[in-house]
Image 1 (cartoon, helix red, strand yellow):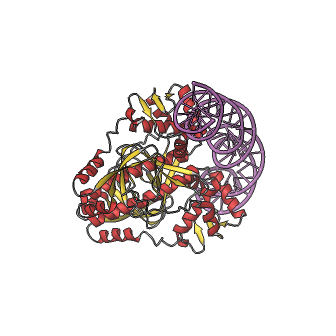
Image 2 (tube, each protein chain N blue to C red):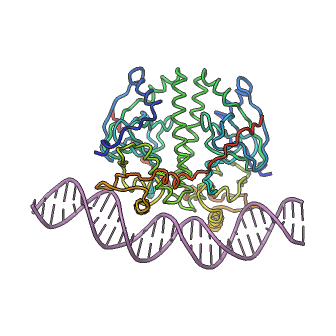
Image 3 (cartoon, rainbow over the protein chains, first blue to last red):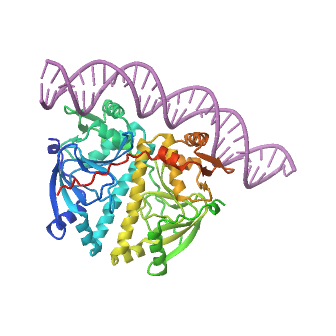
Length: 237
Length: 237
DNA sequence: CGATGACTTGAACGCCATCAATCGCTGTGG
DNA sequence: CCACAGCGATTGATGGCGTTCAAGTCATCG
């Protein structure tokens, strides 16, 4: 339904490739379907598998005891997740929509890795990629305003869901708000304001299709990161 | 001055050990001193070295163009940092107090790693450790209240700075606030309230020595993480 | 059709930010 | 030695952004 509008992200091939190779070679992989809303794995569960989204979308999150939720990432087709840890998952993962996932036994992955440094370097690179994303998200959660957060979200999705002119969001406003550290009402209001200011058009019967009219403007709003004056030199040696 | 009160954290030895080994063996390392407030490396600078705190403390942070700052982590004696990326630093690092750091050339580290899978696994484990910390921090920044944030900060420091009855914080209220996504006034007020409620005593001439009176209470305040009902089974295979 | 779920919008509240005054300690120069 | 500037921290007063509470719309579904 939504996915018809979205092409699979062309990035991540450095690893998707690896996984494909492995599925044809040394590492056993198989595909499973998960219905919308079902749990893929729970926080603190033993991590037996590593997952790749084939079709659909997944959210990974942590909870506080009173129900407050923080979504750490959305995983879209091509993305790999669940390699969070060496033995136990640190997140809960749920299918946002009906999804197909490829599963690889962590154990067999590691068996290959132990004798294949290049493979391990890929794992490091993947983890580093996660780290980069999460660290940027720290800045967003800790220091950006609601409007900036929503703009940043749209920029991120614009880069990952290259639709036919429109972004087809698979997630609800509540998911977005739990990703951005806001309430769903604030997300809604911010989206309306961005639309009012001509940055985007919000369409679709569930208002989940976003036409981005002014990417540069959104980026300016969202990514006011200090243009870091990359001083070189400064060598302590 | 402050460090006299704090013993070096006994954890992290899995890697400190590696680094020590390496410094004695295949990887060249050397020590440098950085004065309080000086930059160790800047965001987007090429990452030539990996660092370990020998003495002192370091903050790593990102900035927005208008000066808003998000501190991602504090690095205390024994901690390793700067292995954020494969080529470029994603953070700025500064010495919080006069500090001594051990530097290892990333290049030589990688030269060893490429032929030593166990070494690379250590690098993965280190990165995973970072990931775990940062992910917990997402939940804190996105979903916890000011009081919970400060309590969580104290619990963290209580675990890392095992002082003689007191925690001797090396950082200012501003640093703490930029770590927790608050203002320094709110941090100060929250600390005062925690003191009023009997959780801690705040002493020292700069009010940076914290005597924790009720750890369990602080943990309860801070870590209301959902007691995750680790459902086992659920094997999709 | 009535029920449910997702979204939007309005109104009022409250937590935290902002602005501002004050205190204590340190270092410096008259 | 003391006056004074400067920094870090606390505390109070006020305000605003985002939350909370509450309608109300629209689409889907039994």
